[in-house]
Image 1: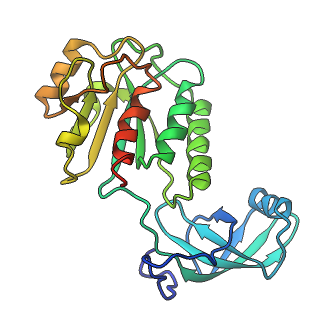
Image 2: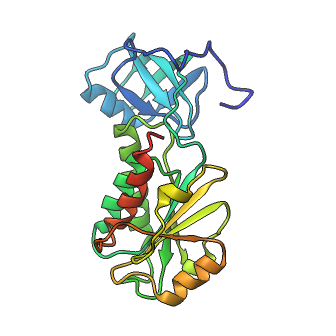
Length: 249
């Protein structure tokens, strides 16, 4: 929440909040009075909410608060901000998933699972063996909608952006970088120390080439194993993120 936004008393994160409303809506920002457009207003009608009902609002950037529905029309709703809700649902440092372009609807499945497992961003990449070389604007928009719905479903306050594809060589290798590589003897959990942001890199069907992996390792990445079995391209990123989720972070 920015300094000029209204602030309420912070809820203690170490106390369970059994009193929190069930319903949540996304708002552009948390402000004293928030106006929702036709889409969200219709959704509130479907939920049978009425003026005076309480709900939760989140801005997709990490902030969440209670709010009261003060006005509900056919194509417009007005909310008044209540107390802020402090949550600890994100990893100690941001996690970016760099995933190769995949065929069909596989990317939707990856984005959905990655959002549920806590990524802060999904960077699509073009690799030597990728089945696709580009992605249309409509499909990219759809993937971002998938991330938004997955964030809402999993009660996250952060909606990870799905970024337009870049060549694998253009992916920044800052912080801790891990690339999935069959045959490696290094496990992710053995080298992950949360000293900096994390980037996880996975390839397409057929995997990354030896040259691609060598360039990543030369740039500071760790090649890590996903176990003795060969995983499909849409399974590998979920396996990497699952290893992190198993740490309880």
